[in-house]
Image (cartoon, rainbow, N blue to C red):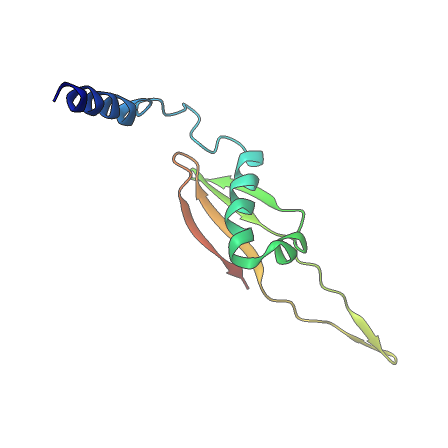
Length: 110
């Protein structure tokens, strides 16, 4: 019985350790961190190739929410004397809470 009481006490102490240690600047304090979080969630969903194709990513903070957008490269092509503009869809976007690193949304942006 003494072993289980000690074990429960240790588990309770471990579970509560650091709960009050919220960083003053939030868990996503800067754009570099926002970019890393965004890439970490985008790669498993869209794949490394799709993520790489939209580098560099940019991060903008507004109302304590980071919005991370990829760069979409579209190439126009020439058909005879006529310029054909290729339509591009699917720019990746991730919105992340600065305070707790919660991913608010992740989608291809049109």
